[in-house]
Image (cartoon, rainbow, N blue to C red; front, top):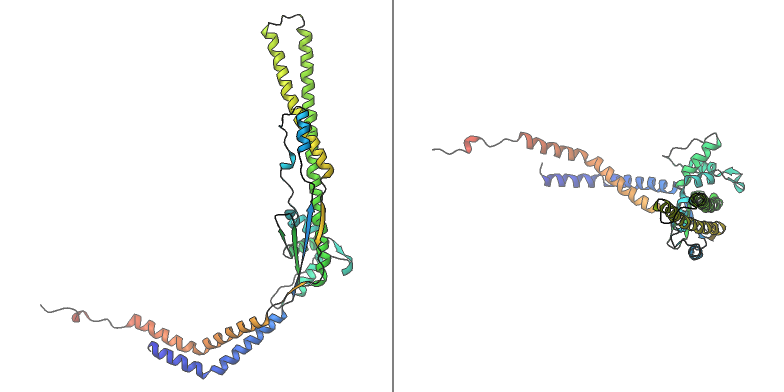
Length: 344
C-alpha cells in the first residue's frame, strides 16, 4: 500500500462514518459543557490596608549624643531589621489564628470548619472529600492549610497592602476577610512593640554595665592617688598606670554616652511605635465572580470527541499500513552480489 492509497482509504473511511464521528463529537461537547457548568462560581474580593507608622527621625538622638560627648558614634536602632507586614500576613501564626476564630453570623462555627465544609461541598465528580477532624486543634490546622490558598497578598512601594480573598462560598468571604485583617494588624502591632521594647532593654542593660566599669575605674584612680601620694611625678612606673586608667575611662565614658543616646532613642520609639492600620478598601459586596466558560469546554470537548472517534474508525487502516511498511523494511529482497560485479 502506497501513501496515496493510504490517503484515499482514510478519506473514504472518514466520509463513510462522518455522521457517527460528528455525533460522537457532539456527545463529548455536551459532556464537557455539563462538567463546566458543574464547576462552582469563584467569588473574590479585594481589600487594602495601610500601616501608618511614625517616621524614624534620629535628629533628636544625634543632638543628645553630641551633648553627651558621643561624637556621633551611636547606632540608630531604626536602621536594623524591620517588621514586614506582608510576611506577617502570610505566616502560619496568622492563618492558625484566623482558622481558630468563631464566626457568629454563620452558626458560631470555627472558620477552619467552614473552610472544610465548603471544600467538601464543591469537591466535584473526581475530587476526594476531606474527612472532618474530630478535635478543634485538627480543625484549626486543616483550616489553616486550606486558608493558605484562599488569599493572596500584594504590597506596593508605598506600603499599601492589598489582600485578595477568594472562595466558592460567598457567605464566608466578608467575615473571614475582616478576621484576617484584624489578625494581621494585631500581630503586626505586637511585633513592632516587641522589637522596640527589646531595643530599649538591650540599651538600658548596656548603659548599666558601662556605668559599672566606670565606677571600677574611679575606685582604681582613688586607690592609686592614696598609695602614690608622696611619689615624685617624674617616676614613670607610677604615672603610666594612672594615664592608662584615665584613657580607658575616657573610652568607656564615650561608649556609655553613646549607649545612653541609643537608650533615649529606643525609649522614644517605644512610646510612638504602635502603628495606625487603616482599612482603605473594605471587603464588602459586590464580589467579583469567576465562572468556567461552558462554550470553551464544549468546543474543546467536540474537537476531542471527533478526533477520538476518527481514530477508532481508521485505526485498522493505519495498523495495516504500518505493518506493511515494517515488513518491507525488514524482509525486502536486496539486489544480489552477482548483479553488482563485472566480468574481467
